[in-house]
Image 1: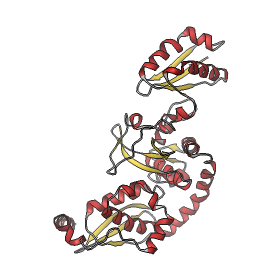
Image 2 (image 1 turned 90 degrees about the horizontal axis):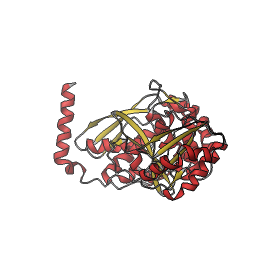
Image 3 (image 1 turned 45 degrees about the vertical axis):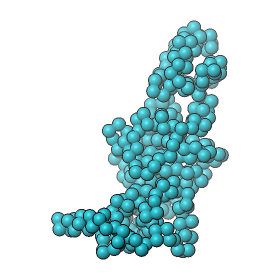
Image 4 (image 1 turned 30 degrees about the horizontal axis):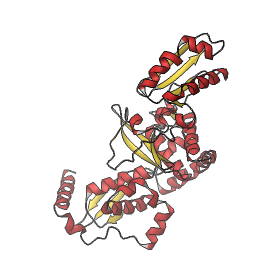
Length: 359
């Protein structure tokens, strides 16, 4: 075993030193008509991470993707570069959350080529059986995703939070089987299911991995009306909100998400700086300093509807300070909400987030 790995290291080093000799005659951009037809079927041209790769990485990506999707034993790639292969493999797993039958890969090198061999977690017959089992469940979910793209993302977020429990011991927690067959999963299961389902309904999404605190984590980027947002279903599903859903993590800007998420993927991430399809903006729960009259009316309306938890967000620290001093003063709340006896509220300074409780 030691001799084998030594050989791999030496071959890889030789590749780095003289990789041009192994790859100089390869046209990394060449795609046959048959290959192009296949890639069109699986929407390769629409995949964000694939588009960020260079020509050699795309060449590896295409070869390995076709091998994985068709459950092939191996594929020979006319190039030798382990780093390129690893980058391409990770890119596939970020673009295609529906791949549930692959655990990893191994490889061997010849003088001028790499043999990529997937590590499958099940037989091809088992793969087909599982695909059939989840087909109806996935169809039921996609049938609920109607309206515009924001409506679809919101409906999926709510479905996953309400119907799929977070369980660190979930079997198949790293793929979509845990979501659709077992109704319990971990972060990578949520992220994979999100990407997979949104792709089926025409909403662009990718998986991102990194850290939340000191723990490895996975979440998503989603595209809405030409703007990218970060979304973390895991956080939404593990909240203590009254209705069990924390919408703070549904459509986040980088400024919000990066407070407690750090991505470690090698691809260039999309910029998420729009508030247009932020949940609180879309649902009329986001208030600027010039909208204090609207905020007062919103609180009054929610109280009269007997909403046990009145949630809203402000645009900045100064607005939040005004809200706490004036809008949420005992005198003003009594005036707004007839019959109120007690008031409590939670406030997150980082997000300018309020949760108000009136009785």
